[in-house]
Figure 1 (tube, rainbow, N blue to C red):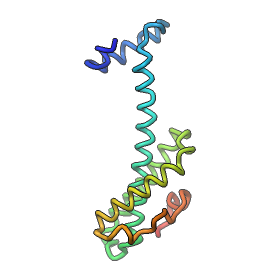
Figure 2 (figure 1 turned 180 degrees about the vertical axis):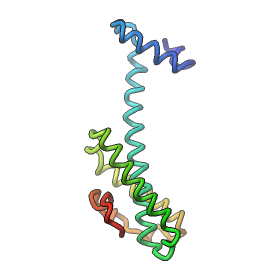
Figure 3 (figure 1 turned 90 degrees about the vertical axis):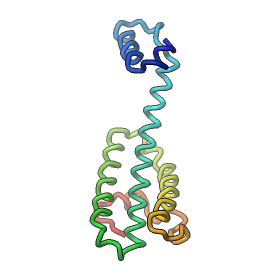
Figure 4 (figure 1 turned 180 degrees about the horizontal axis):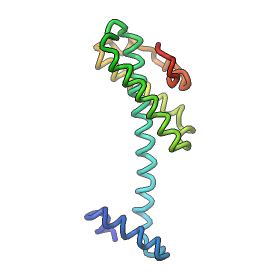
Amino acid sequence: MRDLYDTDFYSWTQRQAKLIREGRLTELDLENILEEIESMGRSDYRALESRICVLFMHLLKWQYQPEKRQTGQSWERTIREQRKQIRRILRKNSGLKSKLTEILVEAYSDAVEDASDETELPSSTFPKECPWNYEQAMDPEFWP
């Protein structure tokens, strides 16, 4: 079973599904099934963290480079899109809400680094800790 997992993932998944449907649970490749289930959860976590990072980076650019807002329609669209996708991820994965504090801290740290790279402003320009709470950053009326 391990060879199939390593060489033909699709066929491995179909085999596991067939075994479950037939009630042949003792034949399942439990080690790899567990690995795949955990991987799916990590993937959702990373997707949420990435969306929040992009949101924070664009909010920072919006706030710290107001003179560039004429091209900011793109920034505005990105901010709106990230808010929408964050809400969607959390609606489909409510268990991630318990990880929001952790994700916000990590995402903000990355957002400062990314905003510094994109704006060419020193990272010390931006607050060390996130100046917005989750509700504020997600508020469609909030534009720092």
